[in-house]
Image 1 (tube, protein in one colour):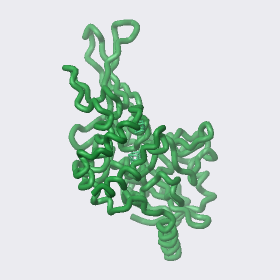
Image 2 (cartoon, helix red, strand yellow):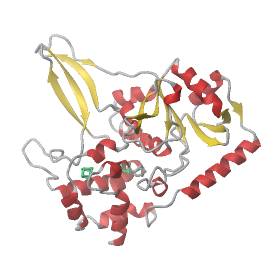
Image 3 (cartoon, helix red, strand yellow):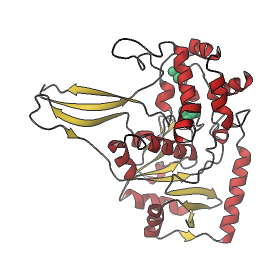
Length: 342
Ligand code: SF4
Ligand code: SF4
């Protein structure tokens, strides 16, 4: 796919142009914090910021989503509700692009999920390279998500007064073509891109004290480790780690009858494997009643089960769960302790 170049001063007109046809979502400030939100004016978009509290997954998999509407007395056939609109996520970071790949797998591999897939189909992803680590909690380099080769339509890397733009799909290429202000990259631009990538790589440090490919084995060997009891003692079972995680996709489905008592809706809401009732079944048994078992399950899912299912780790190293955790349960420390207990 071709490499293009855009002057930094042309980004604002580009966003304005995109806003005519798409809802543009990106990182902006809200209550003093970085968050992914709908961009109302190009000046709001913060392409240099990272470390958002929540991830962009809410635009493909909303926290609460109506799935169908029904008549209580069955007088009309239940109607499926699938809502999607043309949308561009401008400035998605490499770790979130990797996480979106994971969601794509989860929502298409076994049971194709129309609600997720329609939103995904109508969305374009414009990635932006990180310059620096978000903070001491991110460990994307160790998880192999510092760089992404696929999963985006366009990908911007800042270099001096320009953005060097990798095109990932024909849709991304068409978007730039129809705008008409991007030029073909020259040899010097390619050299510059490689230099920027090299400098970036040097700024990010490895956080894990071992090769991440060994993680599934360390986890397997730790199944009966006391570490899980220690973490279970600390954990508050609040579920915040799941809510902010870009790769968590568990949900609960509920039916609700409206106040008129004749119509209702079926909807889904995000769920969390750290909540006590998550693994409780109809007959009253709870398969993960102990907090330590639930914490262990979360780490096994991220570092072993998803890798076995999809071929990639379920953790992209964004650090959001650590930032959100009131008792400072940090995957970097947990994984390194597993290695220590080898
Ligand atoms: S487990 Fe934590 S660090 Fe890993 S992807 Fe989820 S939120 Fe990010
Ligand atoms: S955010 Fe921390 S305290 Fe809350 S469930 Fe997750 S690990 Fe436990």
